[in-house]
Amino acid sequence: MEKMLSFFLEHREAIFIVILSIFLGIEVISHVPAILHTPLMSGANAIHGVVIIGAIIVMGHADTTGSMILGFLAVVLGTLNVVGGFVVTDRMLEMFKKKK
Amino acid sequence: MDQLSHITGISILEITYVIASVLFILGLKMLSHPLTARRGNILAAFGMVFAIIATILFHRKDGQPIGNIPWILGAIVIGTVIGWVIAKKVKMTAMPQLVSFFNGMGGAAAALISMVEFPHIRPEFIAEHGMANGHVLAILLGLMIGTISWAGSMIAFGKLDGKIGDLRIKAMKYVNLTIMAVLIGFIVFIMTRHVQASTELMPYIYIMFAISVVYGVLFVMPIGGADMPVVISLLNSFTGVAAAMGGFLYNNQAMLTGGILVGSAGTILTVLMCKAMNRSLLNVIIGVFGGGGTSNVQAGGAVKEITLTDAAVLLSYSKKVVIVPGYGLAVAQAQHICHELDKVLEEKGVEVKYAIHPVAGRMPGHMNVLLAEADVPYEQLIESDVINPDLPNTDVVVVIGANDVVNPAAEDDPSSPIYGMPIVKVRDAKNIIVMKRGMGKGYAAIENMLFFNDKTRMLFGDAKSTLQNLVNEVKSL
Image 1 (cartoon, each protein chain N blue to C red):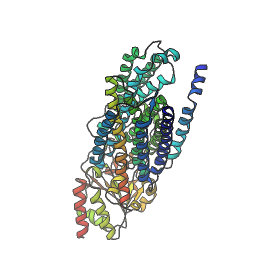
Image 2: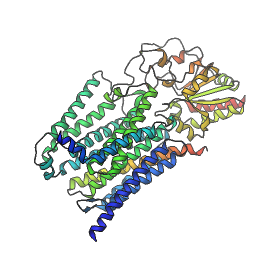
Image 3: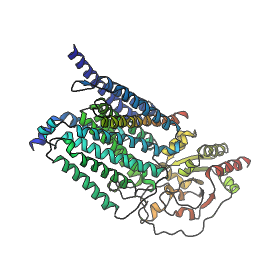
């Protein structure tokens, strides 16, 4: 019990962020028209590419060849997620803009 | 001096993360409105670039700056070039696969981070806290969720691309539940070990990784039919959660907000899609749904065909025409010629609208993107809920390459796998023309009684050439 309480105390900021972000995510999305579902999914897909930051940290402090290789791979894949995600979303949304 | 610049660097880093988080939130917010969507996307991309640059420049771990910078930049360049080329080259019809693919990459990155971080947990840390702590849990969950997301996305990608078929076994539900229980068991097992160094437990990590791959594969394998978008959206939110685990691990606010935001927004999006298709989210997670049931309605009667000329006459002398486009139209790349048909009809004074089912195409909103690509005005695209009450006053409905979204079994046949799904109520219209390549079944592989309806006339052939011929006929009238 004490362990759980101290865990909460130690991570209270993160727990706050998590809870508020959950509500925020729900709030931001809930009124989206169906036509934007696909671009929105794609845009959200690009945003979770933020995992690349973790990959950079891993790579930046890699001390063995093994972690170098895995880190390198992680950065490449993370970048794919970020760049591919944003570019595809932009391409979809460009279609909507043209007819204006 | 050194101390001061250190503090300055960390402050700049944290401020940048705050800015990035705000940009993510704003971007997502703007993405959910048609007018601001594109700017929202670019805004979020800027947030990402800021966060990446600041991390490379200012991140410190035990006072150590980021090393291996040439390698990091090299990896970023490789990823950027590949991602950019793929994203630009792929056809609009293949968009769902692509989203699934990029999502899988993110999941894999999250899993790799956990793979590297687990053996790097310090022995002093373990001596003090044991294995049962938030740090270890975040690593294990990141590994599990990231891997499931990666494996699942790759299967979804293969399925949408037509490279992988469906695998349906009745016992799948129990198999998947068992595997999930085993995975949770592994997490508990690893966290309750008493070890000196985490490296001793690496064999279990590899096994856990392998089981997660199996779960991801089996989770998506049985899902077929029109249900794939729900899965992609769900896997999308999985990757978000996996990224957030990294945020926990590194105490990194940008990863935490970005990941959780996508996790919760993705879940809501999944729920919205489930609602549009009348599916229960629980069944999605367990991995049994879609096309599983077999309808007992057998094809009855004969279909009636219509000639091009008759179809052209019928359309030209109508007041109101509604076009119901489906994936078949997209596959045939017929969206441009379809728009031409509606233009020549409008010139003749016919009112033409498009009825867009929420999941027309392969993803919600996919059809809107495809029609927008062909310059069909936004005002002509009407959601099916809105247009349904108007269908009894419609003279002709033209169904082009759509099947499941107009199948009356969704209303009539409780044994049908799509029973309860909202449909475009095409049969309410006065006349129905169904344009189809052949008598094949739709993506959900079920019989469509609409084709045997008294009011229905079939126009067989490839959507593009048939539409072209129809346009010529209408013009020559």
